[in-house]
Image (cartoon, rainbow, N blue to C red; front, side, top):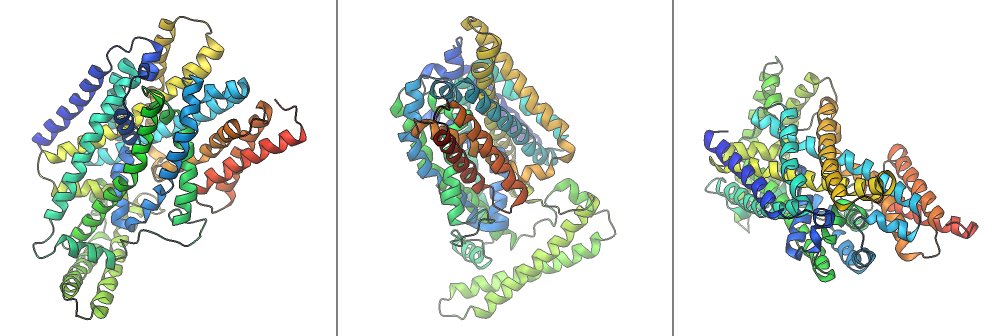
Length: 559
């Protein structure tokens, strides 16, 4: 990065933290600190929820996913609008009527203290792990671009998050998320426009779309029923709906957002806003990856997108012949793409042979790039090396003008900060409300609990930083599995809330054992089957409900 990029990066991070501190003023009671005094408008909650999901991992990886695998990843979100409507009718009014700080506080009112403690503990494990992974994953990618140690990047993100989250609580992080989401939207549009502008003058956006389609990148819907396939229509509609129900209805990091609403209507509008916006936003991010792919047909991309690993691989004796093969494969693919684009403009021309030539050239190019990736894999001790997460960052560095590079890197920083701040704030809230004030220090003053909540925020931020830093050397596989972590636990959470909302005859003991049975079923499915992680949420919640109903039938006195 050049000096102007560093200046823009620093100014953006300073403005984000300062704005969060400014908007978080007056959070001097537990209610204001944890729930913003229930004063937030729908658009602030909605943008905050959206920003929490638009983590740095999503920002970096989704564009790369579009580049490598096309548009089918968008099916992952097909069930989300269904889930949002269901939650607006069920969870939102129930939680608001119960006048709770956490979703798990409601479980004691409905069941008993042991069920509340168990589910709180499950949440703390799941969200604590996710916070560490979510903090470290973008740090790895950013460290390769900035030339810093990934541990220093991790620490920097953690410190910036603590600055405004500890001071202003959820009000500070919500308004910081609003500012962040606004800038993310601007950065995405700018990247799209510049990617289109970088296309050769004789290649239009329509040509680029046709070429991406010829390469198989535009297939959106896959109707095949395959439980091991992560991205098809059925896993998205059913598994995705269950995941969204669990995430937005049972995960405190999201529940706490809409509990800050000034009214029931405002809380519902925040979720409906996400139901409308989320799929188009993900579609647009994936489409940026599609345009970058089309650009790579004419502008030679690096064989290795990871800058550090690329330099290492270039020092090996295998590199030169692999690079020569790669350059030849690129030239062949470029010529085939130009020919196909020209033929496609002529509607009466026969496309059969040019299309076959292009696809063969694309296949040869992919094999040539894989040879380079295999060199890196050997240097790293074997296995399979995947640099998808570095594709978008490579595009940012090579195409974007000075200044905008620093802004986009800053946006990725802040995206990581936004998701992490929401996670540690929810961890602190559950630790305070469901554990500390319930079992450790009962009946203390509001001032005591406010101080405790701030200290718990610092603790969980430190935990996330330490977990990420200690786990850094062996974290590669976990970066690709960040979405799986939640699904290992969400099924149990969703199932117990289904029992709480809809099965009034089920008591606390049956619900308690139902959660344990559901979690056991999920981990068995993960260990012994090839079922996609989206189905874990269905399996877990169904097992919880069936176990709770069975125990209630066998022993109606289970309470």
